[in-house]
Image (cartoon, rainbow, N blue to C red; front, side):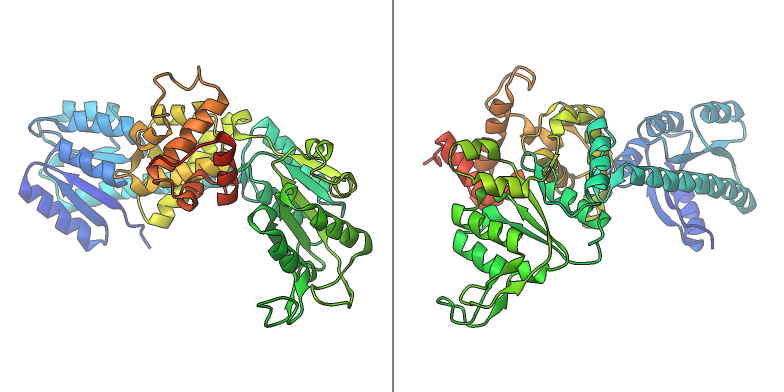
Length: 449
């Protein structure tokens, strides 16, 4: 079955546009038309076309100029030039400028068919190239972790090594670096891969609820406990338990978990019957737990129990070479999810993204690209689509500013833009609302009157 193409016919003569439109539609191609070069560029900017048929003589922007503009900005687009019999020299010029072929007016259907055979052959080559490029892109991913920088290559090796053992792992790194993705990758490469993986964000739950979630409860154990419920420590038995932001749990919960790790048994809230459990523990934290031990906020014995193997994730600012890969990945992901044709980004916009230090790391970059794709009115992301990254009150570029100043300026801008709605601002920043509340309190910020 012949592949169908998305084709744009560009000619200032209505009869030519309608004739070609009718001919191509018979073969099931998706067709659009434009009466001028500027109209064609406007349509190409909105969605991609695989093939353009362009009349060489048009008022204003002629076919050669349009061809040059298209090949400069959209080099993968194939262009066939339509010219008169007396303009062979123009056709040769068009071929030198990147045209795939040319048609001489007046042309017969069989001539058009021959040109289309050649175009479809070129399109298959292009399709094969994109398939191979997609395979290459997959090589730069490791269980949905994206990157090919030296720090990431090192991380992939560590994941494969630590997955072989059953020792407790502590993943450290800033908010948004992908600690849960790494935990899932370790689980996926381990002998427990066919068993459950359960993730709990300790920082998002109050102590009493966290206890019930982990250990389960018996009916009537507390007000509102109308039914008995198994906890995640029992549900995950045989698999991997991931406790994110473990630095936020209370001293009591640390003691309870330490006992579970030593005895491999649990007691549901309200029950005196022990239940045996078997799981691998992977913990994660953005905090400096050693400093927490010195301050008396974290138990030293619990720390040593969860920190048998340490895996540290580099912040995005230390692997900026991965930013273009991540941007392409998120752009494709959200273009697909929103069914929008956003498939490119201007070089100055990419330069802005690679110069920014990303205090929220990969999670913040993901949210920023998603926002840009959703709000974009064209297929190309520009500097204007990321204008909100520029600190509103800073006249200086990012380079003279400290990381702390950039971080505070960006968070304030997001808060102001969302009228200080904490939940929505936290979603945009890629952090949980508890962390944002703590940040605001630490900075002594107040919502404007």
